[in-house]
Amino acid sequence: MSYNIYIGPEPFNYTSNLAEDRPTGFQSLHDLTGAEAAPLLNQALSNIRLVPDEKIQKKYNPPNGWGTVTGGVIFMARVMAACYENPKDTVEVNS
Image 1 (cartoon, rainbow, N blue to C red):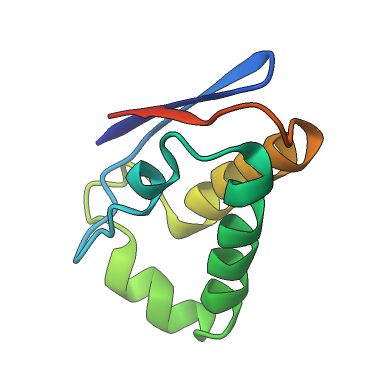
Image 2 (spheres, rainbow, N blue to C red):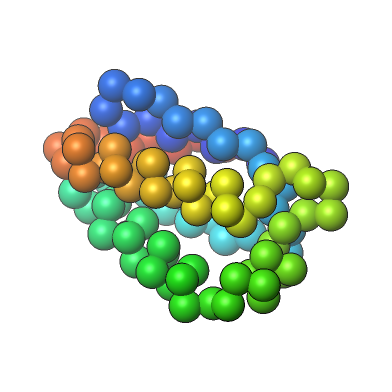
């Protein structure tokens, strides 16, 4: 799965094969403003912190190594920062 997310001047791309029940979380940000999307990403990152690392890594890291939970969290944090920096811009998500 590849995500292209646009907000502000910098586009973001993340390609991964995270396993298990992948949520459609990034798609839910489409057409929101940065101000609307940033708290949702912040909450998602907070929720991830509540799960023990070994448990979430085992569930979602794919056996083929294409993507990691750590990489996904870093990507999410970068998009969240762009949302806070561009609160009036609209988020565009393509996958």
